[in-house]
Length: 185
Image: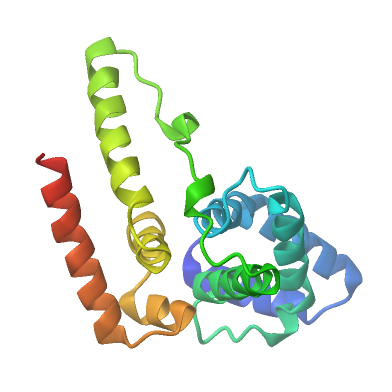
C-alpha cells in the first residue's frame, strides 16, 4: 500500500465504528508490528525483561490515539514518535538512562545466502556494522535506524527525536563518515 493511500485509509477507518477500528488495529499490527518492535529494540534491547510489555503498550497507545492522527503528516513519523516517547518515559521512570550494556548482536537479521563465501563476507560486514552501531550514542543509533532502515526524511526524524533538522543532517553526515572509517579498518 502506498504511503498516501495508507495515511488516508488509517484516518478514515479510525473515524468509523468499533468493527472498522478492529480491522485497522489488525492492519497496523500486521504491517507495522515488526517495524515498531525493531525500533523499540534500538532503544530498549529486546531481551530486557520489560520489552514485551513495552511493545504491547506502544501498540495499544497507537490504537487508542488513532483519532489524533493527522493525514497531512507522515503516519510512519507519528507511529515512531509514539514509540519513542513511550520508551523514553519508561526509561525515565526506571532511571535507566543507558541500556547499552545489555545490547548484544542479533545474528538472526543476517540474510540467508546459498553461496558460502558470500555469506562469510556478509557475516563479517554485518558484525562490523553491528559493532559500530553498538558504540554509537543512543540518539545517534536511533537517528541511524530512522534514516537508513526506515528511510525517513530529515524533517520527520527531526520531529520524532525533537531536534533541529540541521542537527539531524549533521549527525547523519558524521555517522556516515564514522561508519566509513570504521569499515575501512
